[in-house]
Length: 158
Image (cartoon, rainbow, N blue to C red):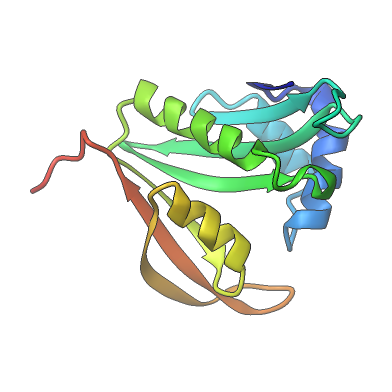
């Protein structure tokens, strides 16, 4: 069984492990710690109870979505390699969208490496569309970012 909870300080060692294998360049421990205590963002983890369909580790993945007015920015979503393709990312995306709904967000945007086909596929599956490219946005290695956007029903057209 898997479930979503708010990230806590004691989750950080495991979050850092997941992040270092999935995100380049990774955030620092201090940056992640500050996210735990922010009041303008969702920092959630997907926990597994070690049942046969989940790895024996407790933290399977995490998501960070920060508010910016009536928009949200999806800063990170990462899943432990052993837990991929088991619905963890979908649960985390659902948690992010529930948070967006609770906060009446009009849209959520994100940046993703242009060659990260798995992530782009996940985002498209959840209704994001590519809207522009940022040249040389990422380092280690240097790579363009694709900016993706998901509008919600409460989006006001000007």
